[in-house]
Image (tube, rainbow, N blue to C red):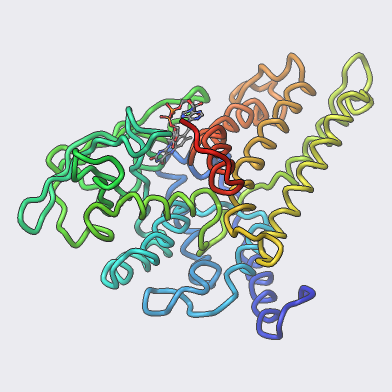
Length: 402
Ligand SMILES: Cc1cc2nc3c(=O)[nH]c(=O)nc-3n(C[C@H](O)[C@H](O)[C@H](O)COP(=O)(O)OP(=O)(O)OC[C@H]3O[C@@H](n4cnc5c(N)ncnc54)[C@H](O)[C@@H]3O)c2cc1C
């Protein structure tokens, strides 16, 4: 069905997205998929999700508005429709979320023609999966302290150093890489590269195990890795500016080329209400507990408010600073998710300690698993404290933190 303000072409494209998704929504695989794309661990997950992404690309749901020269579909103003319909259809997420959500916007703004033509088509199809090598053991919130060195050697660069918390590196073929090319200055001494995850070129990956039992992120080391100068993005010493462009996309304010599908807070709140109705305490549904119902209601108000902000963000005249609302969304979205799962654990009471793999666990243990995973959202891509600093300083114009 067309949406209120669709043009005839948009309406036709929306109908295409809906009917294609309806006809092609994949069977859920026998293997249980992780709750989020950044937790993918097994080869079976990778094969299943890569295949799904490729089909969506071929159906024009990915790279919808990207120039045909770079493997896109060359439309204008259709990506938002495709992404919305993908989210609405509740289909599996796109495994190459870093490639689609970070590499493409970054290279569109700062990459060479050669880089765009070389990398984009395989990012869209999922043939080449990307990861993000920014954080280091001594450089997280203070990212500009990074020490991984890049030393020039003729037309090449030699890379040495260690990255940490690198999501998807265990199956990625390429990495967005921040390096230090000048030790005498902080931000202006950073240079940005793209690199292949080539074990024959000194790149090694070691998985890091999390509290949840999953290991979606890794430590990545570079030991005399040689990169050609054509892998450099933007000028030497301009890496901080390029990194800010990547982080803007990571935090939800960038140019999207494909939806990050998956369950929204709206669908979670529905499941939370069902859980409260089905769970009994002292012989009565937990839903009858007025204090708990009040918490759920307040959550619903916050979720609705956050959804309205997302809608407002699309109307430039209502937002003023274009970064204001998207930057808030990362903060509020992740904190709402955390609170929602805290409420779920209160509903389950003692049974919340029964985890994935326990046959008595409610909903196969998904609630305690999701609760622990919600802590990743308030850390990755910039912790909530850092997000608050950014909003205070850049959006509200408050004095800088020391
Ligand atoms: C699930 C997950 C996936 C990740 N994936 C990737 C990835 O793919 N690639 C990548 O490069 N990185 C990744 N990260 C790393 C992430 O970006 C960092 O963890 C994050 O930036 C915080 O850095 P840190 O862990 O070093 O913590 P620290 O910077 O050491 O911070 C510790 C605490 O101090 C607080 N703090 C620090 N500075 C300030 C300040 N100025 N004001 C107020 N409070 C402050 C922080 O909020 C935090 O609570 C991932 C992290 C997680 C959890």
